[in-house]
Length: 566
Image (cartoon, rainbow, N blue to C red; front, top):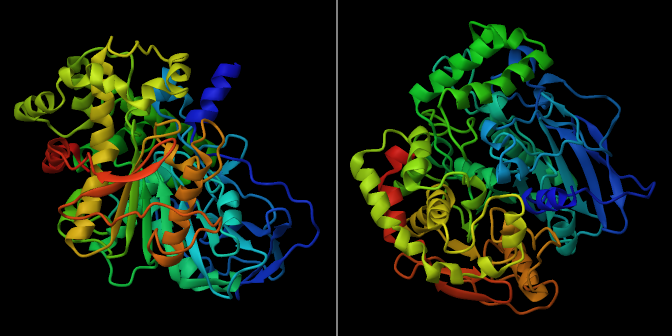
């Protein structure tokens, strides 16, 4: 049990409990349409406002409809609303492949079972310094990850980072509809019967709320940076390509950490998914779905994950529900939109961890052909030429002795993962690591290369890093930022990482804002069209180097976007 709990804490991302509060000096903010009472934490020097409603509850007839702003519907109290405790998280979803399987079962993905869940969850939190450095502070809006099926506004708790900022930033974290609640996208949803990508529309409405109301907290609406990791990083990308990009988006900078770019499934898939869901709910149309009780709807949605998996609609590593191309919010695949310059031209920071594919790899498969059968369910009609190129770009010989010289294989995390997964010793089963690399490159690593290169192509400052440290796997880059103490990197490296992020949020450049801890740091160069320079973060140092993702492998994935669907 102890081993299992430790692995859950390592692999579950940065879900942390918020600090305790022990003062009666509770602040009140007047938003014009409502007043909220928050809670002050003297130790952290922060005022917390939890569970602020930014939209009308998306329940009943508003299920699968565009979110409606809270102000225009009179859904507020004439008194002071309590914002001293967390509101409910959005209803969470399972994945059939993660149910009872090795690492998948341990990848919590940001969910917090101890927090009650509800459809009435379009809420946000605001953390502001008690002693701000100015009357109009830069603002960070954090979009949580969780594969678009789990997570909440404290999946990554911003307390330590906001405290570290020493009065220089305001933190906002938002929630959005998940799973089938937010990403059921059949052709029937034409804008009248329902909307596609409702979860992305929720995020957008939250950003618009920030524009209207963050000044009441002392924030500057013209200095907003959006930030997210995993599906949160993917969400940042989706917000950047909203309607093909905007000249004046509701943010001035974007941080897409280890962006999860699972396949944007095509219309045929989405219709099968929808029909299976209707069958599971014993309904014939969306009107029937809207009439279901919350518990009946949740039961049907949970069943739909297993129905889809058993029907072969998706495979290990795919979350089943997620964003899709709708011709409006997401006009085309993200890689295509960025390549065409159809994105909001704001400074971009992006990164990934060195072993991104591990948590999305089925360790029970032992050959390329077995994995090929899994990928056939995930990708859109791969051709014989596709498979030939894939095997040539990732030959088993690439995963020989030199591959196992990487620090990951000497780290504390490697034997710990092996406690609950049938990991072979380095070199014994190269097909496992071949699969890990393919999964990581296709869904996370290579997209960071596309996005950074496209930004520079269109004259937009971009900064990319690779986190080859800590736990090395998906979400590891966030651990030093959020003060997660498991397998910490060198303290000076952790401080430098926080300083880069803080500087980008304040100045739009990771280099120019002085370290609040008075520590010097390596210059992080812009990503260049020819130099492809990134920042490599190891356990003990930070250094500039050429991007290893600027490679034939990533060029292949980019050329196959129609098949890989991202």
